[in-house]
Image (cartoon, rainbow, N blue to C red; front, top):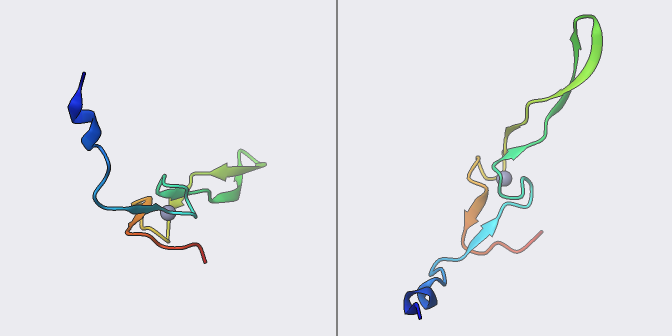
Length: 63
Ligand SMILES: [Zn+2]
């Protein structure tokens, strides 16, 4: 019996960022010429919506 597991409900609700899915990074594919061969490079970039947090404080309904 571990009674402390009942106290795991977060007191503060957070909304996962819909743009990056909570990772804080979004895909950013670019066409690059590497060694004379065109290919797609995806280094990703910081999510502009949540500023890399991956979530917002409180509940934000989907727009
Ligand atoms: Zn985000």
